[in-house]
Each structure stands twice: as C-alpha cells, then as structure tokens.
Length: 248
Image (cartoon, rainbow, N blue to C red; front, side, top):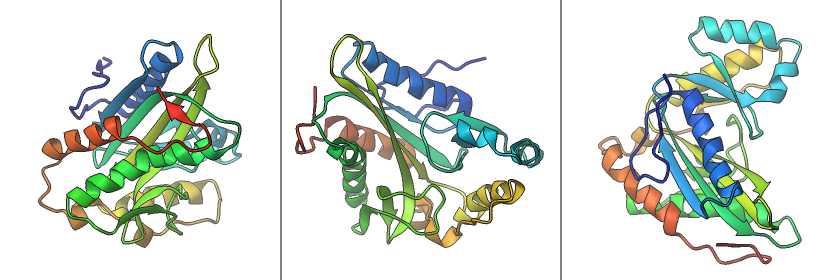
C-alpha cells in the first residue's frame, strides 16, 4: 500500500524507494502546474534499491545485472535525473527542493541550482561543527559531480537537478535533490555499485575512500531533531541572483 507523503513538512518521511521517487516527481509537478512556488520533501526509505537513469536498461548486460542485484536483495529502480547508479537504503536521507524560477539566457542557472541546495547544506553542517564542509568533486566516488557536498574532500551528499517549464508561462520549475549517506559504511554501499559495474562488464570501479557517512564524523547526532534545521535552511536561504536567475 502506498504511503501518503506530507510534502512541505519538516518531518523526515519514511516511504519505500519507489514511493519516495514518485513523491519527488509529484512535488515538481505541483510547481509546474502553478499550484505552488516552493515545496520540499525530506525522506529516508524503509527498503533499499540501486537507483539509476533508465538509459542503463538498454545496456546489453542489464538483464543479468538486474537479476544479480535482486539476488543480493538490491532491486533496481529508475529515476528521472542522470548520473551513475546510486544506492538508496535506510542509511540514506534525501532532501528535494522544488522552486519556481525565472532564468536568464545562459547556462549559469545550472550552477545556481546546485548552489541553491549545496550552500545551505554546507551552512547546516557548519552549525553542527563541521567547518570543512564544502562543494566539489570527489574523484573515485560513484555518481561524482562538481557539486557534491563534501567533508574533508570526501563525498557526503550527491546532488542532481531537473528543470521543467511552468504551465502557461515562461517561468521554469527546478527540482534539486540531495542524497546524504548517514549510516552504514561507505564500503558497503560502494560494493553494491561495483557489483552492478562488474555485472554489466563495465571496468570502472568506485572507491570507498572517496565517500564518508555522517555518523563517521557526528556519531552522537540526533538526526530526527537536526533534519528540521536543514529543511528550514533549504527553504529560506536566499542565493544572490546570477545571470538573471531568481526564484518567486
């Protein structure tokens, strides 16, 4: 049975992976339909899956890889954003933010979108006492990018974004998403991604040392009481407009 998620709540929701991904799509759709100018969702799944773009389904070795992952109790799920496979499990906390924006004439809005999520996330980590939190690449990490949220140059949060047109006007709807490893070991999650890589006969392998879990640096953190502070920063943070990009 589907679990109804309370969008724009400060509470950490606990759906399945499939329900969480669908809720993020619904969140974006509320902005695209003009029903809201901003919305957010914080969730951590009750089950686990290896989540990837649907293009992986076209790989010659995908059927065998999917069966191997299922035998490991890591079913495959698909997402709308790009990148490489990413594990979702109760060890991961996801934050999604949807905003109605007007963008200028260049690609500067892509950087703006990532910083709209990443800068307040780093601020939140700083309040928790992690002064070395920043944005940047983590070579060797799965789904690496220029705007990971890092601690000591190791990937803590992977980020992705998606843009769609708001119905009936020139405004755009931005969905920007972050997945933060909180519990478990980096070795455990990296091993799942590497198992998929081996099954599709892709020689690329990822490194546990390029990742970090929040519990590694804040073992006593009471996450349930800390998440509302992160959501509030994401909701209210104002980035300087760049190249004509601004949010309503």
